Amino acid sequence: GWLASFDQPRNRRAAFTLTSGISNNGNMGIPISYFAFGDAGLALGSIYYVINSFLGNTLGVVVASSGKTPIMGALRQSLRVPVLYAAILGALCNRTGVVLPAGVFRAVDLLANAAIPGMLILLGMQLRHAPIRERQFIIFRSVGIRLLGGPVLAALLCLILGVAGVNRNVIILQAAMPTAVMTAVLATEYDTAPRLVATVIFFSTLVSMVTLSLVLWFLL
Image 1 (cartoon, rainbow, N blue to C red):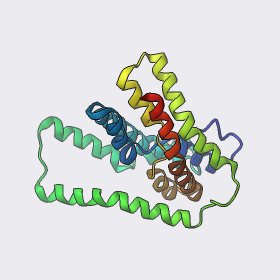
Image 2 (image 1 turned 120 degrees about the horizontal axis):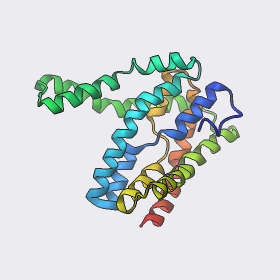
Image 3 (image 1 turned 90 degrees about the vertical axis):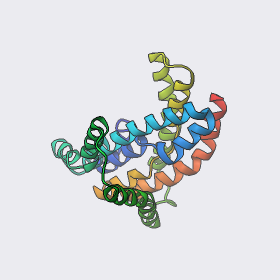
């Protein structure tokens, strides 16, 4: 994404990288993987989502903040994200068998349930002033890389690494998902062309109805 947006200013280049690199592997990827490949697709899709979500909340923060901050400052920003420490604490609790009190777990669960509606509200607010009617080629370039470049690159990597069968199919399918709504949160937080990002999310989700059908036809 960074290389494909060479002709854009730094802020929009960071936004382009976000929208090209972070895909909706949770709300769309997991159900579609389960629909196409059953329990194996559900398990593999969930693993893909966890890895992609972790990278989005760490490297994604670096990319988003690099639009206006030097690289060292962007790296420091990534260390301030609570997801990194929450993942470490979660892994420690899992390994040691520590069980959270019911009240704490319930509070965390309520906050988690509010995350997706909150992100959708934020997306709608950004779309209200988004350049949807403007003929900005960068929007369609980003959508194309996300929906077409993603699965092609995934297929090439699977070929090179010798990944085959359902593992390959799930990786390609997940790589074909549209831009994640989470990118709008990152773009808004770090003021990385949030309206442009919201527009790409909108169009990539819309166009993915066609491209995902083609990818599924190819894989099945």
